[in-house]
Length: 546
Image 1 (cartoon, rainbow, N blue to C red):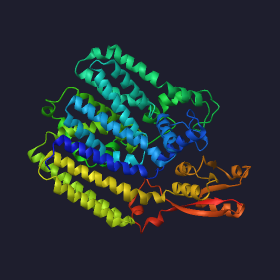
Image 2 (image 1 turned 120 degrees about the vertical axis):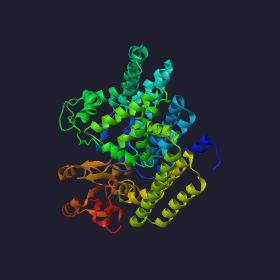
Image 3 (image 1 turned 45 degrees about the horizontal axis):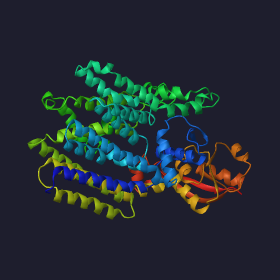
């Protein structure tokens, strides 16, 4: 294909962005996406942008900005899954733009384009367009902060302000720890290059002050909701400070595993998470990292490369040592990973290029085979069409991008990511989401009983029902609470099968509809296989009390 390299990369970036739009029209996934979407929905319904409520109770975990962005989108576009996903998608594109600018300024335009292409086409970024959480926002804000501080390093006051604004946004998404990937790389760079005076320069102290000024909205809301009300019961106790949780428990409490939210750490967790989360680029990435340990491969690189490497390294190490680990955390440093691969790809030639051409081709074929097997075993309505799309794209990539060149390796791998995105958007997730019973029940209730008062009985995690049902569903944690409800007229209850017999016997409940449920973010072979799937399904019901 006789296209100028940079033009080819721009076309491929546009193609990945275009097919990613398909994910915006799917449903909101449980648990986290549906939880965050329901929080933002409650903000709009209550017209209260200060207090965070979940299931009618005060909620303290994540800062506000994720929910403010979703709620603002709801104000413009209505309370829909599309409106919830749109801001994250747009910020993901903005993140790719900042990645391009950073890599272009330190290296070259070609490096910037390759980095953005690798970032946008990596598996976990694609999945995050479906399962929208906070990590895409954090990734973009931390990357934007690094870019502006890099420009500020070259003496620009307004870049200092912009860097601090984006760093503050990252903090208001996840917490204070995001300053580690933002500043960690710079500090180590200054120390290694003996620029000790940078640590004393007023602009960097001004940057810290500006960050604390910009996070005042978050501090204010936490103070109003929690610190002013020590009588509130949070994490099973009173006297909980929202400010203390924000600065300590939510971050360092998780790291040291002595906060209210605990986890189990595995030092190798992110090593094997990167293998699948960064497909189809992960093998290239690990090779590129090993390559960087050889001094001869670092000789011609700008000294500012240290900022990229060490920002990724210390964050990766922090995550690995933490006792609280989740796969989507890795998103935050995928931009730095993408730059490392982009630099390596521009250098490989001869035997090394041939080896990786073979590896990426084998990987592409394996991905198509695995997805085709999933289509057959799951039993999609259009499973053979799904396979035809995958095989056709694989064939096209091999026919168009011929020849032993790095750009052809990039193009073939990107086309496989495009095929994967189409497969997930059009075939896989629409089939899987049928088993998210809360979403299905909420939609059905809205269509068939638009004036009903939606409620949930004896089930704590009906977040998709909260989002899709009309209004803000009421939660009943006991039958006494249900009995004490004064107005049961038009009350329709969403409940698990375990409660159905009692509701029928004692309350003469009428079953309106049943729904099949499976925890779809924890997929297993037994669920994928249509023959064994019924063994795993739970039943939920919408019932009306007479």
